[in-house]
Amino acid sequence: MGSTASGWRPLSVGIVGGGIGGLAASIALRRAGHAVVIYERHDFAGEVGASISCAANGTRWLHEWGVDIAKGDPVVLQKLINRDWKTGEPVSVYDLDDYEQRWGYVYNMFHRQYMHAMLKDCALQEEGAGTPVTLKVNHKCQDIDLETGVITFDGGETVRHDLIVGADGIGSAVRGIIGLHPEKTPAPSSCLHANVHTEDAVRLGLVDYSQDSALEYWGGQEGKWDKIVLSPCNGGKLLSYYCFFPREKGDFTTHTWGGEDRPVEELLAPYPELDEQVRSHLAIGIEIRPWRLWVHQPYPYIASNMVCLLGDAGHPMMPHQSQGACMAIEDAAALGIIFSKPYFSGDVAAALSVYQKVRLPRATKVQAASAKAAYNINERIGFSSNTNMPKYKVEDEQKKLTIEEMNAYDMYMDIEEVLSQELGSSFDKEFIRGLPVGLKLSNGVVIGE
Image (cartoon, rainbow, N blue to C red; front, side, top):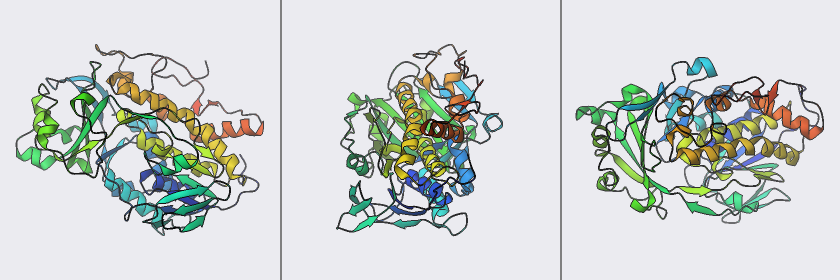
């Protein structure tokens, strides 16, 4: 592409939602030369929850935007470990020793609040390219005029923007405003989340899982919904547990994250035969809260005129590929590239058409793969490469999600290919939808053959 697209102009951008996806989009669009305002519905734009996974396909954009990753105090993962449900012995291990060498970036595990603060600092600070982002709290989006770009907030305040990004999460108001009213069904599994302080576990003589620097799983091999996921964060000082079980054992679809903590007895009840070492960790769990899980079918579109959706607002997915945050970060990166000087011609609706064509196919594939990994850990990126393990089995070897297609993906090439199609021009780069021709995936598929 040329150094500057003909017709490029700086835009007034409004982002609805001040979570991780909204902040990532604000940084990307700030770097692209636009004036960005975030509107957060609550009185403080803060994230709740615990750990958040950021693999190489997300971490690369944090580096490109100049985010101070050290502020997030991440754990750099060294392994993925799947353990036997009863004994805790490793069943499948995916080693990440050469991960940075292969993909150029490490696999970070953040505490959600720390990652949010890290991104907010980057968006709002004076340092770095672009005008600092403005953050406005207590601004709940009520409506958007899709012809004029005017947002109306509760209380009647209005504001107009050239580009509006709906980054308002799983319960997105913007999604409904652009005409999407998806049917959602409760997932077959429920989840309780708990935190364990490593120092508390060590003081009691329990196993110090922080030493593994690993994302660890118990279960998931038997086609059952029972699964424990351990994510270390805060430099290993905090162990974040996600505890899945069949919904008939406990239905939390009417609960919200910010409600009262659940009793530890409720956390332990579904797991009488669980490996005693990890069960002892759960027994000292704190901040035990239900995580509502809903299944959404892929949406037919994620953009309308000057409005687009990002992250969970545009493609909610189950958590079992640990790619939700990375998909939101990739969405943000796509907007930053498409609206940058080399690519943006001045037509917002046309640019968002490219955004939709770039993001929907990739996010939809991850959505489907996340649903499969809910009951079969072998479908999870990384473990899906361990084809020599005795218990390895996936639904369709040719269609499984592979680590190569996640981390070797070049978004610039994908965008240039889609733009070429839109303009009716030739695309002569050795890439197909962002993947290099000749790349061999772990399922034996070779790109371009």
